[in-house]
Structures are given as structure tokens and as C-alpha cells.
Image 1 (tube, rainbow, N blue to C red):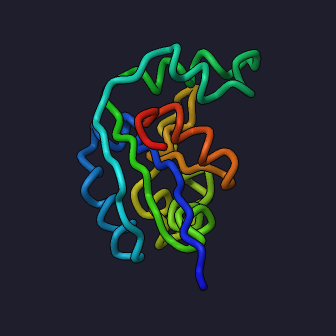
Image 2 (image 1 turned 90 degrees about the horizontal axis):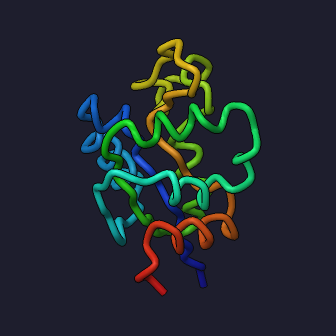
Length: 142
């Protein structure tokens, strides 16, 4: 029997601005994962403080808030077997310049020279963080 897990994907403001939402979702679905919930929204500093709680006191945190509130983003709950690992593999390395070709960041991202790394997408880094993050962005999901 296989277990099915969920993860959170955030399609960040730079990707929405560049009209890459459909391409990113296409890649996730083409891999065989299911989109369980999807919402386009402009987020708030309060939601980001909860989401990035471990980074709030770090010097780069204000640039993250500025970047993530610079426009709408798309929050998505994605489901499938080994989905956390699979989505992170699809995304590629955090640094879009170093991300491998064939990944979302490797094919579509680049370094724009800003204080925050504008790298198109966020994906939960483990099942525990996925559950925590999904509760923040989709509190209506049990």
C-alpha cells in the first residue's frame, strides 16, 4: 500500500508577474501530482511572519517580506506519493543560476541581483513543515 502525502507550493510574485503560473502548475501535474487546493492572493507581513518564523530575526528577512508582498502569489496544496521530495526535485536548487536545466528554477529562473532570491517557487522541505505551512495558507483544510 502506498501512502499519499501533501505539500505546499507557493508560486511567488516574480513567477506570477512573469505569467509562469500555468507552466509551473503544468509541470507539477505532468509529474502526476494532484492539485488539491489553489488560491491566488496577495499576502500580508503577518502571514509571512508565521510562514517564515525561523527567519524573522535574520538580517535578510525584511527583503523576503518586501519580495513576497510585492504582488499576488499562488498558494497550492499538492498531493501524491513522495510529493515533498518530488516537488523539491522539480523545483531545483534554491539559487536559480545553479539550478539544473530541466527544473523549474533551472529553466525559468535567473538571478535578478535583488536582495531577496527571486526564485519563482517555494516548496515545503518535509512532511512536518508541509502540514504546518498548509495550516497557515489553507486553514480550512483539515
